[in-house]
Length: 323
Ligand code: HEM
Image 1: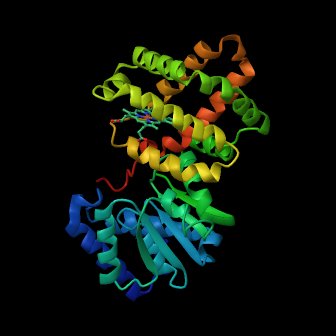
Image 2: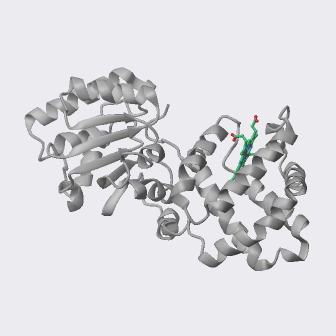
Image 3: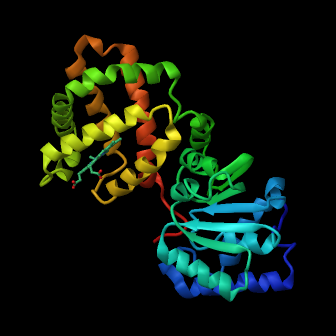
């Protein structure tokens, strides 16, 4: 690593980034948790360490996901004037800050997109970027899943982490697989569905009974909910998932929307483990011996796939830009 990654910046570039930091300091804790005089080093120099990656220097289009207060995105836009940098951020207040900062500092090649990266990846952002950058956004495995639909083939994800985390990096190695079910597993789940659908009422009754037994805090979220209607909605959601298992691309947008609604229900990440246990347990109740170990594994994998998408809004934590 070069001793000072900002050394290549010209005086005009320094002035522009100084302007961004000035605005950031004025916002103080309302946008970024880093507000002291070390901001140049903490934000700008750290952002520009990304330029050590040749693919970034050569990139035409870059997406900075969870762009927060605009680092690394705005700093990279200044250092790479020929590249188009899209700053993807779901929180409106942070987007307003970056839009103002980009205008005030005259950074024309940075575009602020007030959206979730999942939604952008399902629209014009799909396979559109040479490089995805992310600084202190959630776990690496989650990040890899978020970034991959945005990247062109052979695109590169660059993640800034406070400190390298071996456990997370190991999870990243496995992250290519979390959505994958084998064709045999898909067939198994599908062929078990008619018998389960016939017993949907019993299945969903058992499911909520188990869930409420094993997880009191999950149970509390359903107080006041019409459980007859809720059981039907769950059965419908399961049917949709089973029918679309071999077309994950088509499942992602509705699952992302369902996940988004769940953030308003008081759900926490850990509840997904209880829900998975209760679901497999209810299937054992309903199918008995027909719920063979292979079928159980296949359903566990289907749930892992669905919950890996559903958990995204719960696992992400914009740690560098406290809101
Ligand atoms: C893969 C996992 C899950 C699936 C497929 C799922 C599916 C659904 C569906 C279809 C609804 C109907 C309302 C809507 O469409 O927004 C719903 C509502 C709800 N879910 Fe989930 N869910 C899952 C995980 C969880 C978890 C982990 C919790 C936490 C305990 C949870 C708590 C709730 C609550 C409290 C409601 C009712 C909201 C209300 O009507 O006030 N869900 N879920």
